[in-house]
Length: 257
Image 1 (tube, one colour):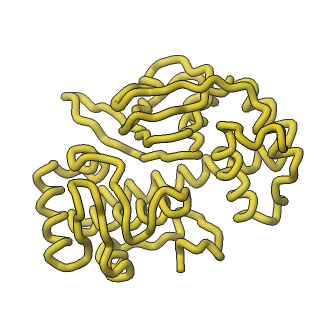
Image 2: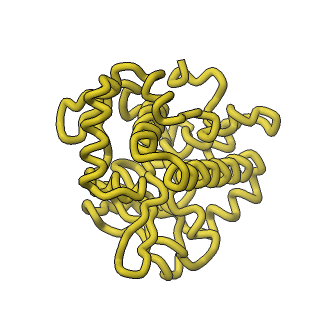
């Protein structure tokens, strides 16, 4: 692997290897698995803030790996309202679902200036079949995406505004720490209040009021418009009805301490 030590695909390898350590019953990555992933043909592309990686109904030919920045999956409904259904960060295989289905059933748009690696769909598919541990890790990654989707549906459909925001803040705190992008009690939100509102089915005004209420309860502090400091993580998790089980992290994950 020495020839690939600086490969831009390393974050993807790290993410998939993480899943191999979660599901140890099907084996961990070996050097050949990692080498095969790092050798995938790819094209690096910079995407400016608000730019699209793929739009709904487009034919897809590539899978996309986030190298830097943040992206969101979303659907636009009649009247133009937007529902954000997922947020992705460094190392995530953002467009694995759309690329395997052939036609995008939702849009993927970046939240910040970002860089991505575009890998031909057929190369990803071929590698997944040729190397079972890689294929299982990709499958696991897609299954965890589904688990997160289910939790977001429950969050929007059955929790009140206070719990919805608290829950999302807890999720970001763990995911950012696991990805090496922040601490569980001190991080930068990768989105505006308007975008946060589109994640939880509220208006931006309601989101602002709810954040202020969480501050007043000493559950969070805001060092800037997007900077979040969590004073008591367990109390915030209780307020958000948050259980990390749906993220399927390793049992020895330091972010869970």
